Length: 348
Image (cartoon, rainbow, N blue to C red; front, side, top):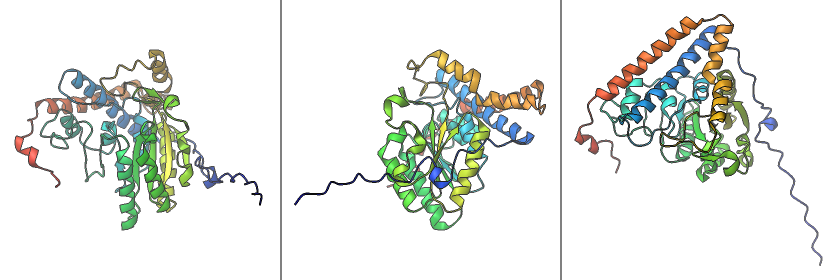
């Protein structure tokens, strides 16, 4: 008996770009004067902190790995502006900016970088492993992609407790190729967990460009098989990030499940302090700095709208530099951990 020719399976109508769910990238929000000033100060604190951390690394005060967030400040700043008390954040190893955005002490963060007693992990965690339950910041994780399953677990706990909180789970374009990411997507979609997967696409996974490492370079599509909608966001514009954050948190709090936000951003420094970044040209970096810098965009709007002048913004910069200088001085002079610290925080 002849076998009937099989019909090609119908294409799924589910779209991860968000269109099937009625989603599209929202327009950047219009900030008030105070919101512009707050965003400027918060991003500037991250920028100056990271610049100082780079200096201390070069001077030998910081050992091990050190991954700077310079250029990507708008991503975490805009998303933090969309959170309410109790919302959680978890990220990878490029985490200093996330900690500062979650209002962890600059002294505590810097002292952890230098391995001192006053560090947030009492000098044992270093750059990649800091944590604050009080501030709802759950790390800093050194294993690529590992935080995605943990962030999904935090969202599961929120749903179980019925507290209406949302978890922001950050990872990069490189980590987006890790297997545990998709296991997490499946579970989050199946159980409609209140988790926002934020893919910080800074174009390079260490030294490998997105085009060389990913068959699908539109990361907002990565949830297609799991019916998770996603949108692309201009991660260099803090207003666009805030708008996407508002949309995503409202989506999750309404019980609609997870959402993917692909933040199209750019890091100015190498992958880590030991990376000379020879895989891209100086012209490419300079073009982004001169045309798309997230802090300069806010500064230009403040001046254009006459909400602040150059002298007032210089005063903000000085205030931020003083905070960072104080943190650096503390981190260099604080005592090192007592050897007995080796026996604390051990899980058997």
